[in-house]
Each structure stands twice: as structure tokens, then as C-alpha cells.
Image 1 (cartoon, rainbow, N blue to C red):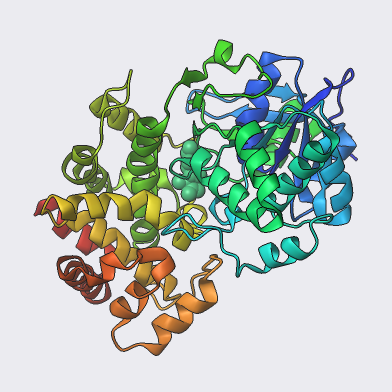
Image 2: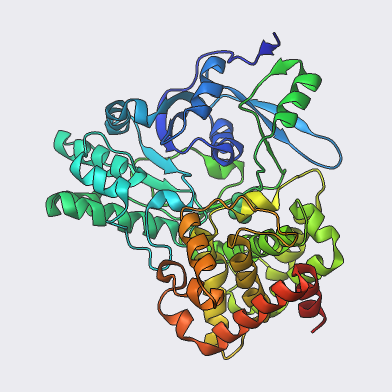
Amino acid sequence: MPVRLTRRGAPPEVAIVHLGPGAFFRAFNAIYTEEAGDWGILAVSLKSPTARDQLAPQGGAYTSLTLSEGGNESRIIGSIAEVLVAPEDPEAVVAAMANPDVKIVSLTVTEKGYCHEPATGALRFDHPDIQHDLQNLHAPRSAVGFIVAALQQRQKAGDNAFTVLSCDNLPSNGRLVRRIVLEFAAKVSSELSDWISRNATFPATMVDRITPATTDADVAALERTKGYYDPACVVHESFRQWVIEDDFVDGRPAWDEFGAQMVSSVEDHELMKLRCLNGTHSTLAYLGYLAGHETIADCVADPAFAALCEKLWREEITPMLAEPEGEDLNRYCAQLMARYRDTAIRHRTWQIAMDGSQKLPQRILGTIRDNLRSNVVPKGLCLAVAGWMRYVGGLDENGMTIDVRDPLAARLKHVSDGAEDKVSALLAIEEVFGQDLPKDERFSAEVSAAFEQLVSGGARAAVETYVSG
Ligand code: CS2
């Protein structure tokens, strides 16, 4: 048996509860917090026991591996003091969050973890977890249920509220989480929602570090080079950027001393990141996957796909953005291309393609709307939407099944299979496209034309036509 990684020394006292202890959190938040010292994290898995099963035998410690073409660098991270699996004992999680020593509840639960309607941002009261939590607030299932249950206990005990810190790739993530928390709390009592709105804060954040899923090969390579076994290890690029609105009710770690940028409004940074990075990531994910590219680096090694990104940034995305303070949009995009080209990062198109119904609105559709408002039909982004439509149909260009992962996967396939006009049928999914986009004939005609091109000539040819146009 190989030696298992184990913690040396006691963990710091818990002052942060983090919901969603996946790879991104371990490659990002937990590292900044380790650097800032003193603040221990209780990490809570809302669903799967995997992270706990990997971390608990190691006392919460794990390896962070910075990948680069010049060689990898490893480091052991000890800021996670404990991991709980919420479905095993939801009451214990609520109690831990209600403990007044906890000053921050942060989240990386992915887009679908907010149980909101992607097109509008409203809480989905028809979501099964939300329905369950409204009836059983003592033992919730959803992130919003846990936050409201813990804040209710704080209110009853006469304690301080906590800061709710969303670290997911959603626009105005602070405002979004505040809205769903207050919408949920109002169903419990107006007194509770008033108390929360007066006492808790919800700073928005922009988070950025490319973190491909850890593979068995990564774990085996670490064991070969370091001589210990660590299935909780995470692999990531060296780049990182964290922009945070400085609005905390009861203090925070000194993340800013380790590179986090504290600002009064994060909106422009968020839009830049979501639309320039995540927008082209999703575009490459669908069109690249269809063209047979396995990773982002493979995509941009293909000149047509590199030109696709450049043209999207230049003509469709950056003209619709305000330049955030301290940033230069051209330099930002050039740096993105360098990050994408890094062959040490094997970020799979299939991984990024997941949950597209939850991602498209903020990554691509907002930019499309802005272009249409300026009387421009953004052909490249319409091609990206058509790529998503082709992808969720479930068959690739060789007729092989695609393993489509999406909370709406079954519905998307059903809609796509059952319709003669697949584009119109998919555009009618209101929680993705809203009411306005399907009615815009310039948009629907362009997506239909792009879809036909994808079906008749394939993704690579469609990309070449776009970049040479
Ligand atoms: C990616 C992001 O998986 C995805 O959808 O676009 O995880 C991306 O790598 C990060 O946002 C980079 O910060």
C-alpha cells in the first residue's frame, strides 16, 4: 500500500463554512485562505461523499499541483479543517453554520446549484429541492435552504448574521444569491427576510483559475513523483484572479495581501471574464467537441479555432464590454489565448460542455442581445448556439452517442428528437432563451442557417467559413 498523505499539525479554527468542496474550491479559495492563515474552513458537500471520503483520511490536507509546460510545482494545503456530507446529517450542517464563530459562508456549487431560472435569476419554487426545503427547513437539501435555515437560527439566538460569498461563474453572483435567499426567506416569514436583508451581506466576486477535473493518471503521477497517495489532489494553471466586493459583515481573511483585488463593484470584471473567457470556452467546447478536439489546447492548436476566438473577441464580445478598472481588454484576451494554448492543461471540451442550459445565458446570450440591440447580428456566437443545439441532440458527426450532462438533458433530447425544426423547438425553451430571443427573427434565422451548416458540412468547415468571412 502506498503512503497516504496526512496532515501535519492542527488545522486552524473554523471561521468559514464552504458549500461545494469540488476541485475548483480546492484549487482556488482554499489556497488563498491557506496563504492568509488563521481562518479554518469547514467544507460541506451537498450531494456526493467523494470529497469527504478522499479528504477525511488525510485530515483535510491535499496537494495542489500547478501545471505548466516548464514543469509542475506541488504544495500541500491545510486550510480545510473538516468535511461534512450534508445528506448524511443536514441538522449538523445547519448547526455548524449557525455557530457565531462562522463569519463567512462561501459557495462553489456551480450554476445549477442556485436552483434559479438562468434566463431571469428568479428562484425556482417548482424545483424539487426547494419544495422539499420549504417543508423541511430543519433538514434542508439545497444551498439556499441551508443558508436560510442557519440565518434563521442566528436571528432566533440574537447572533450576528454572516457574509454569503458566491464564487460561481454567474453575473452579479452576489445579487443573485441575495435575491434567491430573500425570496426563499420571505416564504418562511417576512420578519426573517427583513432581518436577513438588514444584517447579512452578499458581496459579488469574480473568480478565475482553469482547473480541469483530476484524473486517475494525475493521482498516479503524483504518487510516482512524490511517493505518497493523494486522491484529493487538484491540478490547475498558475494563473489566478479573484476580484471581490469588500462588503463583509464580520471580517475576512487577508486575501488581498495574496493578490485578491478588493473593489467596490465587481460587475465590469465579471462581465469581462464571463463573456471573454467562459463565452469562448463554451464556444470551443461545443464546436471543438463536434470537430473531434479533446481539449481546449487541442482546439486552439487548430488555426481555424484560434482564429474563431480572436474574431469573437475582436468583433462580437469586447465591443459590448466596459473596460474594468485596471484592465486592458486587448491584453486580457491575448493572455487568455496564451492560457488556452498551454498544453500542460488538459481541459476537456466535454467537461466544459456540461450544463450548457445553465451556462449559455450569461456566457453567450447576453452578448448576443447587446449586439442585436446595436443592430449587429453576431454570426460567430450564433454559430456557438447552433453548436450547442447540435451537441445536445446527442449524436456527434460520426453518428456516435455524446454523453450529454445537463440538468435539462432528457428534455433537450426529447425536444430535439421530436421536432422537424429543431432550432425553433430548442429556442422555445424559455428558461434558457427568455421570451425575447426566440422572437427576434434576425437571431433565429442566423442560428438556423448555422445549424444547417453544421449538419451538412460539419463544425470545422462552419468555423472556417466564419473566420474567413
Ligand atoms: C469552464 C470554467 O467548465 C467550464 O465551464 O468554462 O470552469 C473555467 O475553466 C473557469 O471559469 C476558469 O476560471
